[in-house]
Image (cartoon, rainbow, N blue to C red; front, side, top):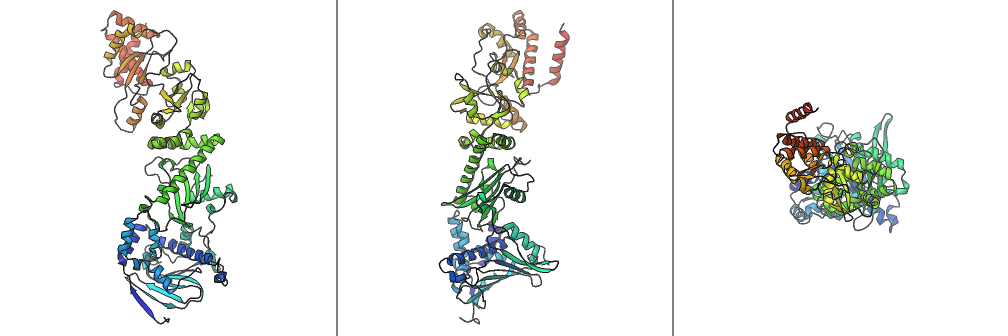
Length: 622
C-alpha cells in the first residue's frame, strides 16, 4: 500500500454505546485520558526494551527513552510521543481496532460473564479510546523498527481511516484535536495549558519510570522540563530509603504536618504481585469514626494512580492507615464497581491486613511506649474491629490494652494479666467506669480491693461490648464487678439471708417497678448499698450507652444489694420489726435505690421528690 492509499473502515461495534459506557461507567473525570496515554507510552517502551535484550540492534540508534508532551494553544492540540516499540499496519488494526473487531455487544457480554477478570477492559483497548472524552478528532502515527509508518485517524463517529505515513523515528505519536470546552476558550479544564498538564502528570504519572518531558514557558523563553520524578519511592528497597525521605513523602502526599508513627514498606512476589507503602499517623483524625470518613489508601498500577481512595484495600477497623498499593495486576481502566468483587484485590487486602497486624504486634512487644501512644489514638478502632467482626477476635485480642487496678500509668495486655494471676484465681475481673478515681470509689469495688484482686478498668463505651463478645480469654471467664454472682466468698460473718427474708421481700415490694431483686451483699465492706446488673443481658453501663445513642433496647436487670453489716441495715431491720408496713420503710427503700442509681450515673425519675425526701430526713435527724 502506498502513502496515497487510504482505507476507511466502519466500527463493527456501536461506538457511541461503547464511549457512553466508558465515560459514564469506567471513568469519573475526563483528565484520566492523560494517564491512559502516558501508561500506553510507558508500556510501549517496556516492550522495546524487553525485545532488545535479545535483539540489541533494535535500539542501537535510539536508546534514550522518553515520553514527550506538547501543547498547541493556537490550534487546540495536545500531542504525546514516545520512542517505544511502535506498531505495524497489522498491529494498528489488531491493537487500536480491538474494540471494533470485538464489538460492543461482545465486550458487554464478556464483562457481565466475568466481572472479576480485570484484564478484560484492557484487552478491549479502552485506555486509548479515553482520548475521545476530550478530543473531537484523534490522529495516531506510529512506526515499528524496519517497517513503514502508519497513520490512524477517527472522530469517533463510527468510522476510522488507516493509511501509510511518513515517520523517521521508531515509536508512536498521538495528536488530539481538543473539543473547545477543554481549551482556553472552554469552561472545563484547559488541556492546552502547560501548568494544567504539569499538575496532572505530577498527580497521576509522577512515578512512571521514563522521563515525561515538555517544553514549557519560562522568564527567558522556553525550556524542556522533565515533569515526573520517575523512581517511585515504594519501588526502592527499604534499606535505600531514609526515614527523612519516608517522612517527606508521607507529609507531601497525605496532608499531615506530623511525621508518621510507623512506616510499613514491603513487596510480594507470587500469583499476585504488588508493593505496599503504608503509614500509621501520629494522631487520629477528628472524623475517624464518622460515617463520612474516607480511607487514604491510593491504588496504583504500573506506577500510575488508578484510584485515589480505595476502600476495599483495608478492613473498616484499619481505615486510619494511610498509604498506597501498587500492583501490575490491575488494568488502568478498572472501575470501583469492578474492584469490589475482584479476586486479586482481595488477596492484596488480606495480605495488607496481615502485615499491619504483624507490625503492630512487633511494636507492642518491642516498642511498648510507642504502642501505647498508638493505642491512645487508635485503640478504639481495634476494639471496634472485634465488636464489628467477631471472626477477627483471634487476630486482635492480643493487641488489646487495658488500664488496671494494679498499674498506675502503664496498661496491660490480657496475656500479661493472666500471667500475674494467682493460681487459685479462676476469672478475669473487670469494671466499667469513666475514670480511675470514680471506679476506685465505687462501693462494688470494696471486696475485690480488700482481697487485692487485679481488676481491668474499661474506660470507654466500646470496651465492655468487646469483653462480652470475647466471653473468655485462655479459658478464663470475664467477670464484671458490677454484675451479680461475683463468686467471691467473703470470710467475714454475714447475716443469713433466711433470717431477713421478710425485710428483703418488703423492700423489693416497695421497689417492684424499679428492681428485679433485693439481696444481701457479699461485696460491700463499708458502703450501705449498691446496684448491680443481672448476670445476663444488658448491663447498666450498656443501657446508658444505648440511651445516649437514642436507641431503646430495653432496661438492664437491676439488683439492689444491701450490706448486712452496715448500721443502716440495722435501722431497716428495726423499722421492719416494729411495723412491716411502715411508710418510713418505703421512703428509705426509695431513697436507697435513688442513691445507688446516682452512683451508677442515672438521674432519679423525680429529682424534686428525691430532694424533698432527703431534706425531710435531714430535718428529722437529731
